[in-house]
Image (tube, rainbow, N blue to C red; front, side):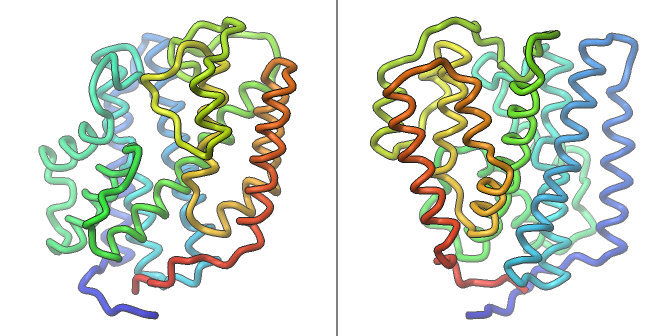
Length: 278
């Protein structure tokens, strides 16, 4: 099913947005090594999410116009992170501000999307505002739902990349930006294990340790939407890499096997979302 839409973003407009982003990020660079490291971490993440969203979208057969809109969403989805860390020295929303809403605020205050038509501008804003919610509102239109799911998948793919690379590096310098200031203790919360076992997402407020956070990352598999994203997770062995960073536990092994089975099933199952934005 193909739906004709009023959404449009030209190559020239996208290049202008990319130049704006680069200039904006550089305005946060400075001599403080902690802040500088955090700025570079989020800048690189944003650019990689652009690559991930293009990869998924290409496999889904999206048009060049739709891919440009998706790339703009990915570019700006974490825009608020730069102000968040500079102001509060943390990426933990519960200790600072909702970074998705902060991203929207920056775009609106700076009139970054002013050159775009209203429909495209609103679509980008909504997808960004939904990217870190536990769920996307059910009453959104199909195009917004499609792009929002796409952005959430691409974001998770790169976060999987970041955390598994960090865990696989072994003992070394700790990154509070990645560990979200959580204690690296043996604690594993029973309610989090129960949520994983029952196929439920985990809320950030439930986390009590870094191990809990690793289990939350494994639970993201339940919030992946598109077949190409499932296939990337399988090919890159993200779940195994997170499991290897957790302590030995028969219960975790059982949950891990269940997640692998779910991943395999979804990797081989065609996408239920048939609306292709053009």
